[in-house]
Length: 309
Image 1 (cartoon, rainbow, N blue to C red):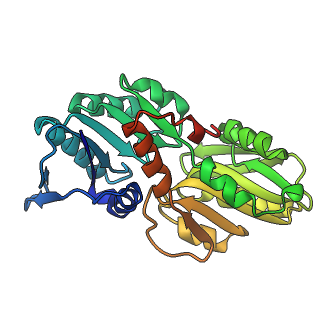
Image 2: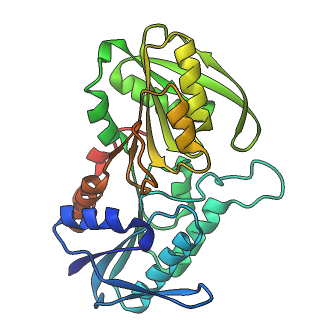
Image 3: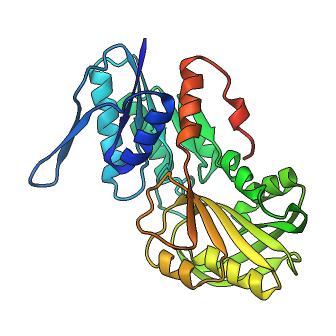
């Protein structure tokens, strides 16, 4: 039995780092593109009887998701023994339920498509909603960036630390961090009039003279994050750092971060950073994913990586 690691075009650098950490060469994938935009990925080496790990985050454009589906289908038709989709960033995860009439549950649809394509296992990180694991009829290894972020937080003054949730939806995650770090918790409550636009925000809790750490799973337009950071500074916080797993960073995100009172934003490389910013620092998840792949291949426990949810 062999192991081969391949990459979709959205995650080539991360996949190369995972393969290097694992101790293997990244598999050869060729993507042919037709003049009308249609594309066809193919494995340029045999995968028969192999455990195939396909690394691809599914952030926009939707071609990233469809490329992953095509790669899974190609591996199945090429007689791979097992097909594991390594999805560092699971797109469409915000569509985990019907929050209003006549809308799709996008995350469930994505799960259905991946299983229909022939995936045997899913490996992902910091899902926007934990219940998405239940959308699959195959095992899901849900990893947490907290295993990396705690090392970064340990370098801060723990006695003066307060953890903040940027909104009510992130309260559970922030509370878990606060318990683990044995520090206080504050909540930023926001009211939206429409998606990606905040009408107002208030802070619940005392941050006077504190070093605040904001915890979230993703940063999209950075509106919530920067509004929260500026408000926390106004309320007397000494500094505000943010730890967010997925650097979606769309629209005016970079400009908002640069203009905000954020001291620093620490993200992972589940999504490639589109441009440089002095306020943004990237922590790689490659070694973590490589270690989990090794443990899966050797049928070893991976529970030590489930530090926090």
